[in-house]
Image (tube, rainbow, N blue to C red):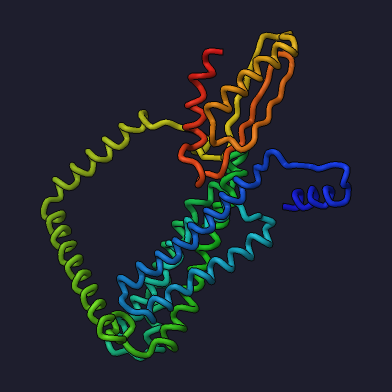
Length: 344
């Protein structure tokens, strides 16, 4: 952004020249970061909706949902203090962990609700309910965090790419643990004085909808009980089936390809040309002009085309219009160019 601002300033101050950016890869970077950020936001909204579906209480959902913004804000403090940047990996870590940020809070609130149903006062239920599950949710959180611990010590390109993701996921989960042990029980004791789950309040259509959700969840629980009973009564069959499925899954590993990073649409196609050593510049130029003509005919999505020619080599960089304005991906365009270029 600052580079483009400087270009605009130069064009304004020096009227004799005009600098035109031909290739701008920052568009892909900004688009990628924006997409990951949007994904994190959508993930948080969907997580809250799922909570509302199962808890059937706006107050209980609001109490648990507080863990998401608190953990994310604290994680941004880590990004600042650690010298990290907003990139695909750090935002991807937030998107990955946003659904797990409410797990500890759910366990704490459910246990508090259980004690409340037993007749305990809100304050006593919050204190005793949180104390009962503290060890369990700490163990659950730490087992998830330690999975990402080895990533911190990876060296080379993989370490550069995934170290920040590991820091972000681990730190956000630890923040959610602190929120579940402090803020959630406080809100459960002070904000929610009445029934906390399925409170049945609100307009008649809302109450009917919540009642319908309750019936659906009850049916799901009954169905799960039947499945669990069948599994316990047929342990040998279940064990053999799971073992066979595991073996079949492992047998598929040789058929799965591998690569450093998944293919992505960067809005650009490159054509690299190698010629015989010592090829004269005018011959190389003629070949590259021919390649340019083929690219123009076969790539109507091209926005800008830049050609470089040298003795024995050349390259063509084709900048494409935004992905929303074209039907083909950059990979499909590249594959379509291979056949007409193969005859040169």
